[in-house]
Image (cartoon, rainbow over all chains, first blue to last red):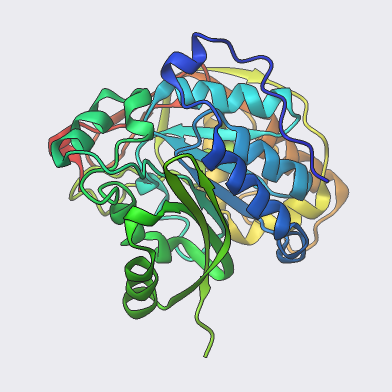
Length: 219
Length: 123
């Protein structure tokens, strides 16, 4: 069993600006734990988390994979970058956070070079204009507001994620039922040649949460 | 933390800035040295992903001249220790990274690179 990362160094004030790990986070941790042995076998050189928030997930992955992996994180929220770094330090995982949306400064150098990508996006369906506004605040609102079908932010990254994935890479995505999973899965296969499976799913209050795992379609 | 391993992966991403946008040039930097655990396997695995010239130039800019201009074929312990130090132990805590092409400046503060762009600069 892989221990849940220690977040005791983070304060109430931190969680006023940064998403506090909740059911969706824990489902993602559980899914990564299910796949832990496979992830060790892949032995990723580079692991990237988009929207790293508190840094809980990347620190957890650090606990699985150890120090032979470079852990990169991005977040549009500077508070999140700071927390990600300190959570890494608290859990003895070196994380290099980058304050940016998605991964655009990395596409040039990491074309088909990232072995593990995780993204727990703002998936909550909201009014469409709420997405842009939420991302612009570069604060906690941006961690959940997802636009009409909750895909306003996720959709942007899904268009580009394939460019980053190495041959044997895996990409883990958190989604809810309202995001229309069959549509996501079909699109990713048809447009980007990425096959996917549901690793875990769980109902948490009103949310029906899923973790999808994408791999290259090797036919 | 902007370690040189990360600097070696970051390119300018301003809309339309597609050539000569890597590596970013350091300016007015404050560095800290922090010991990290030596891990030769990680270094060997990572070497094919490095842009060697950019790494050597960045290291020299920060005052470290231990790396050879060409990536050596024989990876002896002394070389790997120097590479370890350059990639993982030199932390740029404060300063600016500038694009050689469009001159966009990305500030580094408390060891975190701010790569955010204004709306009109996003591609």
